[in-house]
Image 1 (cartoon, rainbow, N blue to C red):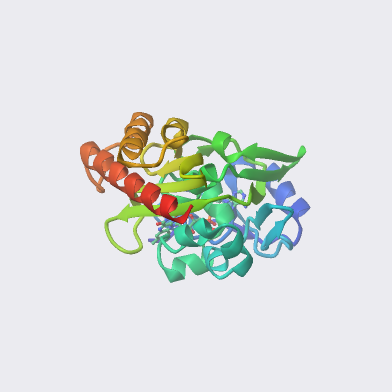
Image 2: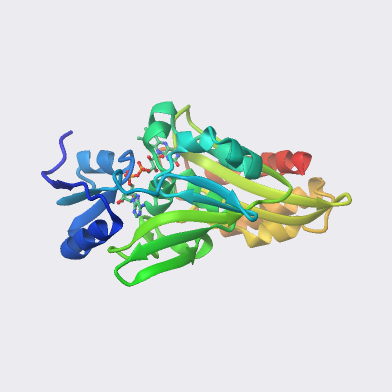
Length: 284
Ligand SMILES: Cc1cc2nc3c(=O)[nH]c(=O)nc-3n(C[C@H](O)[C@H](O)[C@H](O)COP(=O)(O)OP(=O)(O)OC[C@H]3O[C@@H](n4cnc5c(N)ncnc54)[C@H](O)[C@@H]3O)c2cc1C
C-alpha cells in the first residue's frame, strides 16, 4: 500500500519541531521509529500531510539512572532498552517486557516515546509505565510539563498530550522487589491478547507493596489498584492470587476481535496475571 502524499521535515532542534507543529496543527505529526505511524499511513488509517522526523534532535536518545530515578529519552529504542546494563540493573522488568514486543527488526526502530505516545491499547509500554508509576515529560509552545502515566490515557489513540506537544522522556523511581511481565499472544511478533505487568515487594513473608497493570484488555491500559490491594499484607498464596485476579477482572473491559471473544480474553487475563504474580513473588 502507498500512503497519501506528505511533506517531510527534519528539523535539528526542538524549537523547529514545535514551530512546525504550531504551523500545521492537526495536519502534522512527529515520526520517531515509524513502525506504528507508517503502517497506519500505508493502510490509509492515518493521513498526515506534514511529517516531522525527530531523529536529528539531540538528547532524546539516552538512558540514565540517577538518585534512584530512571530516565529514558523518547527516542530510545526497544533494542537500546534490552541492551542497557544500567537499565537491567535498575528495572529488569523493562527488558523482560521489551523482549516480548514484536521482533528484533521492529525493536531496532520502535521507540519508547512512540510506544507510549501513540495511545494504541495493544502497545506493551503504556501498561508497563502505569505499573511503574512513571511520569511522562512533555514540551510544547507553553513550555514543559509532566503528566503521570496513570493519567495520560483517555481512550484508544487519545491521550493527555496536546497536538503541539512532544514527549521528550519518561521517568520512574527505581522499582523495588520482584517483577514480571507476562504476555499471551497468538504468535511471536504479535500484539498481546492479554498481558500483565507486576511489581511486588516483600517484608518478612508478606507482600509489602504491589502494582499491577494490564494491556489490551480495554481501550486504555488498566492499572488495577484493587488487584494490588488484594495482595498487600498477604502471603501471596492461592487465595490472595484468586482475589487479585477477581479484582482485576472487575477493572478490565475487553472487546471481541480477531484475538478472540470476550470470555476467552477474560480467561487469558486471569492466567497471565496469575503467572505474573507467581513469578514476581518468587523474585521478591
Ligand atoms: C509487526 C509489528 C508488530 C508490533 N508488535 C508490537 C507489540 O507486540 N507490542 C508493542 O508494544 N508494539 C508493537 N509494535 C509497535 C512498535 O513497538 C512501534 O514501533 C511502537 O509502538 C511505536 O514506536 P515508533 O517509534 O515506531 O513510533 P512512530 O510510529 O514513529 O509513532 C507512533 C505515534 O506516536 C507519535 N509519537 C512518536 N514519538 C513521539 C514523541 N516523542 N512525542 C509525541 N508523539 C510521538 C507519532 O506522531 C505517532 O502518532 C509492532 C509494530 C509492528 C510493525
